[in-house]
Image (cartoon, rainbow, N blue to C red; front, side):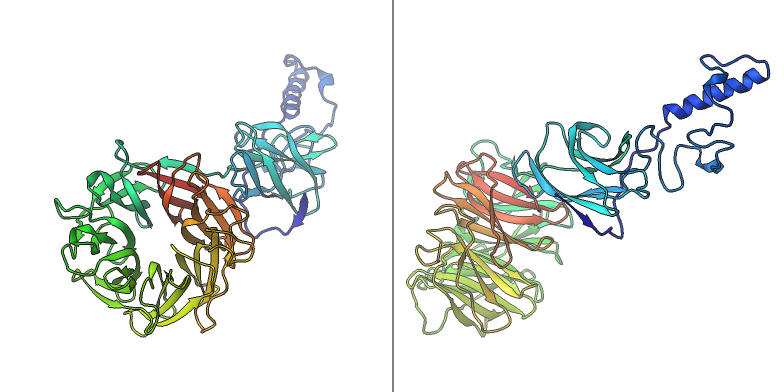
Length: 557
């Protein structure tokens, strides 16, 4: 299918260099032979006086052709080239965006052929696969009649073996030009790299991934199984190469310091900050920091007394330079608790952020925190299993003046929560509860959206499973692809060998698609998704096959 499109203001044009035609060279050789014969020097081999008619015009210009001296190199002022039979004007450009089909071996997207600068000798454009920018693979994908403007063609095809480019060539009734425009056409599909570092049984539980944009690195805080569940850091290139493992628990001999880590980067300080359930202090909050390469690790409150906590969720309050940790106070009827930690002093202060008069038991399981920078608010969503309801707390950044809203029935934890700053919504993703969401089932991925600027509350959860079965929404991790305006949710399909799926939706939860990104692996757990902005890729660190650590990746589209 092709359509006419307006020409963009700037284009990436890759056109083969012009090449002198055999006809042109033959004419010059024979012309020299005629001159030699005239002066009695003998004819050049292979030529005679009949080789060119008197007064004939050289194919590419000559003394009598009317062409300027600077136009005798096989090209004309408007960019035409002489390549024998067929047209002399190549497409001005060829453009192809990102492959829209994430299945291996299939490619889809819009190809745009830039019209030739002069289409007087062009009838159509042939589109080919190419093994490189100049070598065609097979027959033409499409023959697209010229329209007088650029042509858009919707490509949806399998990729031939060895093909990595697209080539567009001008064509007319005399033949096809042998030079044209080309562009890469990269097949987009999920990839996998084992980043376990240690090889004997693996290392990692509960990964928490962040991207160090300044240095182009992936940082993954882990519970290091091989080191008595101490806090570890896997430090890699963004493609999963050159990985190193560092112990960042900072205290020799202490064990169980790294349960359920939650990591953030403080760009101002150039530090990685990590909150954990610290077994060395009886399950109280652990607050650790290190440089972005894992050096100079510090344990700020190693043996500080405090309540036992569960499932810390850390966010950075960049305005006040503090690490905020929403968690569950296991020593106070599982109520909602907030810690505020200062890197400068290494101390943390805590306070209860449960609703007054609310349900006291099991009121704040599996919290997920986010910061609304525009309103200077902390947003914490948690699950109350007593009432089978999820609750949103809105507080000042110091945990004061909290207000509470119940999320409509249908959504359970664990949650992924993130701020859509364009639509001014808090997006909350969690497993669905059975029978409570129309058209959904049990533990499928579901979405609710909460207004950030008014008291309108949260929408009823909607199913975003794209037709996947029950239990396909376990352990969700979510990010926003701002470049394409998409919500990306990664979740484990518990009843399908614990494989992992990517749910890609509009930011309002519509038009969702599903892609299996397991790359053949099973027993995947606790995925942690981040976006590599520099390379336009989704990166997912996850445990697999027990406690090995894998990096699953796919390009954004």
